[in-house]
Amino acid sequence: MPAPRQHNSRGEKGLIKQGAMPADWKPAKRRQKDTDATWTKKHGKSHFGYKLSISVDKKHKIIRRIETDTASTHDSQHFDNVFDTSNTSRDVYADRGYPSEEREAWLKENGFRNQIQRKGKRNKLLSECQQRRNKRIAKTRARVEHVFGAIEQMGGKLLRTIGQARANFAMTMVAACYNLKRLVYFEETGIRAL
Picture 1: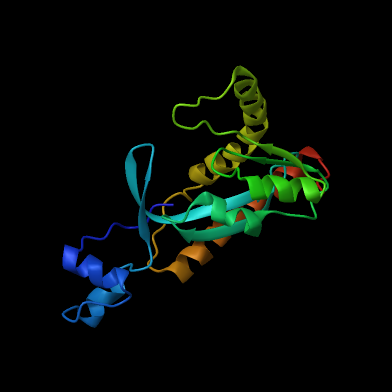
Picture 2: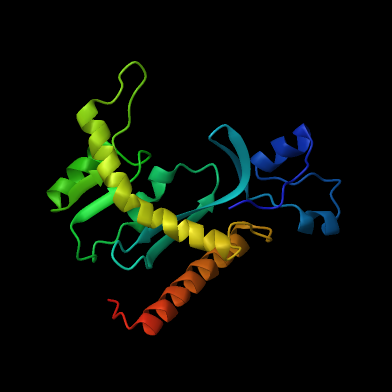
């Protein structure tokens, strides 16, 4: 979720990383600077802002849990917070950013079926079997991407807030609005969800 970009000098960036504010910033300027948002790179492009991780019901595409953080935090660190143990399905789907031996062992130990996509390593490409498995998993995972697409259509992919607390609130409201939109759809079509 992009946030308004900040134009800070190198010295100012260094102070912000240390948790301090430049002394020459007046109170009005401080209110306009987002010192919580961070930069990250995705597909070769740099992004400034926050990250939204979600857990979605496969059947109804309802957001069950969310986690918000700064953009530089890796997705895999959100897995435990968005994982819903009360979900009736034992299949756990996730993209290539989430696999780890510890996570795989924990899922198996707790009776979940690991449907996390495999990731190739340098000089060790995925086998044909692993590629077919990833493709099969991607068909189900596309339902999660539909949620992000719907959020983008609702205008929810750009934050116009400054600060982590406001960004968290804004992303929570976007998720709640999306779920309400799905509820209205279920009411109109006569589908009984959950």
